[in-house]
Image (cartoon, rainbow, N blue to C red):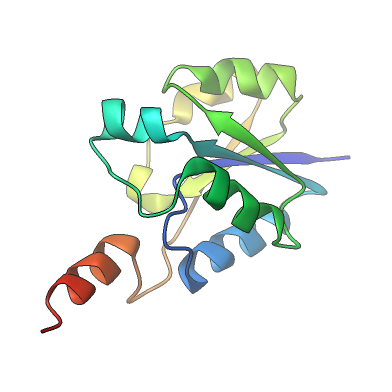
Length: 132
């Protein structure tokens, strides 16, 4: 069995997220999503989510591509996660290209997937904010 892991906030879930999850699942048999906690988003990313961790987790668990959702509490946990879950492939969007190559030292394949064009949570928030 080939295990794949990806990380993210997945707030305001949209078709770009679904595309990422589908493509990640295609790379293996079992997909783990490490979902950023509310505290991690606020303290480390300075990001306020619309949906709570619990709500975002529930949404992800309903997606057929996702086999397990775990909390992401720190930047540093990636190495321990790939060890604990015997991860074969680490997947993340190509806006992070090169940032996680160090995981190759753990025997993990690192894959940067291209983003779905014309969609992002940031853009959705901007568009909604500008509606009068």
